[in-house]
Length: 315
Image (cartoon, rainbow, N blue to C red; front, side):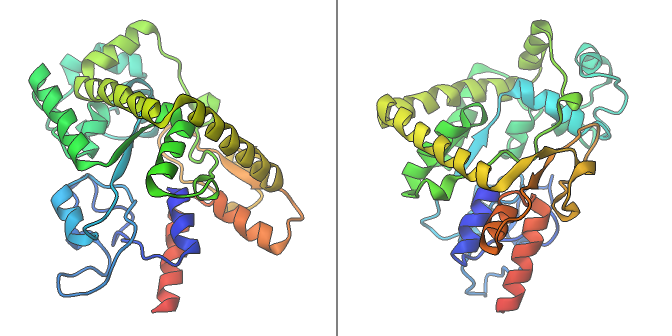
């Protein structure tokens, strides 16, 4: 997201901003949720990237016909562990002392009609616009995967983030500088929890829509890498990682607990049990370097506000 923010920011592109923090999530996205959009307006939007529950027909009402659609999937096992930590205060998880406790008692306490059920089951499928408590059958899994494949031009994989960036760069005819980024929104190790193989299997069985979709697109991802060329991929990965390392050496003093950040304005949003880390910049940066490095580590909420204020100044 930060990468897209910086790409649009440096080129003065127009973002489709939500009227609130998100596009009225967890409701399905609707064009009326976009700040400044109306059917009568001739306002053109170039980038839409804020959190939403996807609904293609409504996104198409806002974005140009030649819009490139892409999304990224995360392994549902680690996604579930993260969701429990990040969303512990939500109704679906409140009664449970641990994720293992939840997995052992789903039949007893989980209700499909609870307000936050999507945090606890098939979270990925929900965000892509499907029923997280929907039918579980091979036919339904196949239909879901084919629908996602039709809606999106490219489906990336979190666990192969650098390879994903190379494919995205190639698809959009971007440069290495355009896809340079560093990890944001990372949790501290103290708020991460390792899972047993038994619990991992329980998650796969519990969130079967997510798991089947992840397996399907993991395979299609590597099919695309093969088409791209393994040697070419290795070469581009090396160049991407070299440039990122150089950039980090210029900008970053290191990852930091939110309480130990020197610039409190760059403190990431905290939620649930998760301890979300930020970054401290190196002291003594020149003005141009400092401006670039700050944007590199600016969290979503602060960068959104920055871009909104920039747009207001240009109106």
